[in-house]
Image (cartoon, rainbow, N blue to C red; front, top):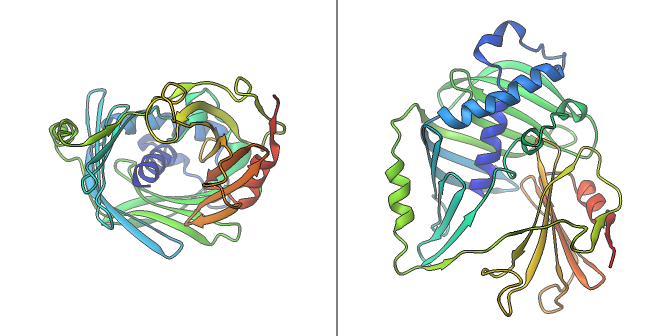
Length: 339
């Protein structure tokens, strides 16, 4: 939860905050940003992702639940290091060195080691050379505020249609680092808040804090799932009608229970297609229907994250995303089996 929330929202804020030389072009509360401005803010993500060193406590609240984690993020040249330690419930550590992510459950002595790209972080469409965000969102500059003791710019990202949520973002004036992000519903109600309760920006990099922990796997059951790049069409599926604003940015076949999907007996392969509108993502999972596990359709909500599960012939489809429930239904309804 924290790795996804923090990675995506920190990059959102770093991208959308005004660059130091652009203060004279601030967007008035009632005037939306131009595509050129949005493009400039998106470009700043590269600087933010390679120069920020910080440590702090990050809190996510929504749907009656609150969870917190201690986050350390270091950069040395092009090398990225991150350590996220859950402070509530079952102990869990997420360690990242560049695209290698290691999730460790000390109590269970289990470690999950994955190679992840940045497609689940903002902005996937920008990485693919697509910056159509202003087609689907208006961006407004609002009155400055303070969060965790830091002066912050505040931005309101308002959707132009009912297929996506809005955001209110607080970014540190000096660095552009995410300090707080609210996910807003159709009536601008706050569905979920992610924020630093305390943070120190500009700390000395400590890569060994991450690397040493990643090496200590003696006595752990290490799971290394293998992801295979594919396409919906190659697997016999298609999305009959696209959901406005969303484009496919990734499609892989992954194991449901660890191991190498399709290469080990008893390992069930799951197809995962990821779609993005440049700010948020929707994941579509397709797996063979299993009556012992897939007992009934389900629609669940945790904070801003909606989950829809239902049967599709001999298959079970799960759609997950920080989007309104109607958007998930559009994705599920557009899936079509071709063979």
